[in-house]
Image 1 (cartoon, helix red, strand yellow):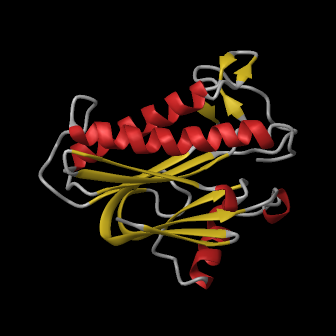
Image 2 (cartoon, helix red, strand yellow):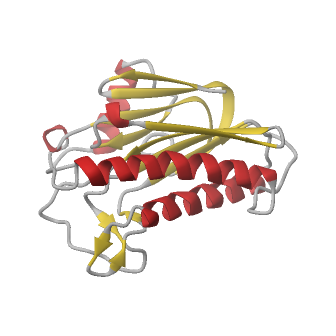
Length: 218
């Protein structure tokens, strides 16, 4: 499976091989091929209003020799990252998450966070099983479902109801290219995805709720 290296303000998740990665990450979003997924911890002072964040982040990654990586930005202290793994019927998953909930939202509503700092949930998942593009999209849906369940069960209460995530969440799912087009909840693949992502995000959400809810940022 993959390996995680912490070098604050960075986390590097080495996938162990080139894989197809599906995400809406800041750097290299969409469906790409990558060997690693990175996080960069930032503070408000790093991102002034007139900054081209995408260009700035690409430069930061290039300076580190990681311009080819799929990469997230997070205001969460990267030392607080959480990991979880699962194996079901020989299919292995490894999830890595940073979880901040200072701009928590409930799906279908929108709160005013204009004068506040923003947190986020960033999740990277490595899957051992080869998938088609359709299978990778379904795997993403299960990962997002697990993220949502974990956030809801952390019990962050908003005026609109229980938080389902934040307004700036991002998920990246990596898997080898393969022939399997299915990764739903009735499959071993879907079960393994759900277990790992849920456990990593739920652990991070509970920790944030316990120690950082009143912080200026998460």
